[in-house]
Length: 145
Image (cartoon, rainbow, N blue to C red; front, side, top):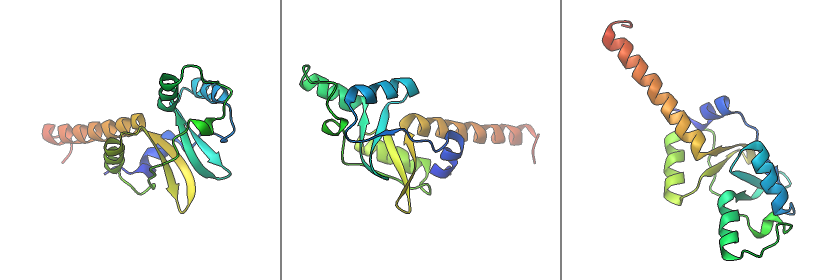
């Protein structure tokens, strides 16, 4: 089974983040520039929360007059579900599905080592399945014994 460590080898470990005081507009611009759906909100070296497209849309739906100069700490999700690099991709799918979330910080020994999205997880799961299918096709056709 493919692990989060395998996924991070392919994807990379770069994590885009902002501070709790970063204005929402600045965070949204960074997300657009990097073509990502969420940013970790860091308090020093520790994640304090996550600011996602969903957080922005929910706030906008509740109060269309809010100010984009307000800090992301007023909009971020503070309860973070995390995983380690030893977890399987299947574990990630289960956590994401159960809690209806799209991003998981990867924490090893108390240190942030990555951030994975549902897209990363699905892409990895598809790649593993395609590789297995290829091996089975090779075996069935007699190319590999």
